[in-house]
Length: 109
Image 1 (spheres, rainbow, N blue to C red):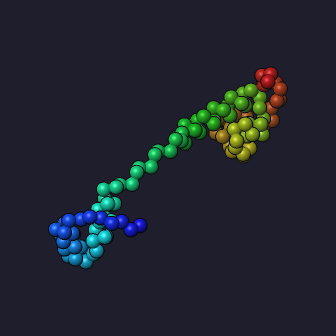
Image 2: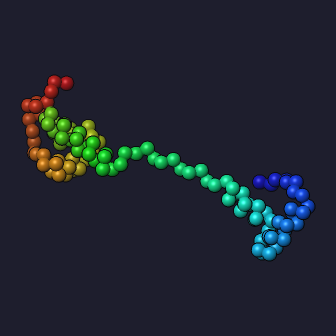
Image 3: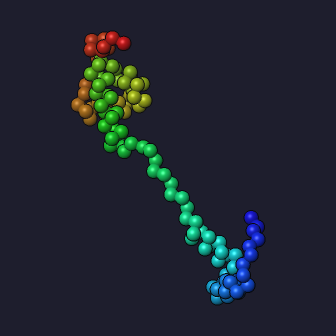
């Protein structure tokens, strides 16, 4: 972009002198000064749940669903994870990973 500025002669002479001493151009000095004044806006923090908290929530969901008699496949569909991941977490939680009677403990829907 091309911009026209009205800079007093004395100020321009000082800028030109500084640029010459640095082996640079006035436009480069002005660009650097502007960048220094206009700092990039900080990026907002992502609105995510910390992994440990998210893991705890998923583990709680798995525990509750298994307690209600849901199968590994049903839990994986409800939680949105693979059956392998559900079985792994269930093992970590000390839950039975074998087949269950789907209707034995499940509340009526």
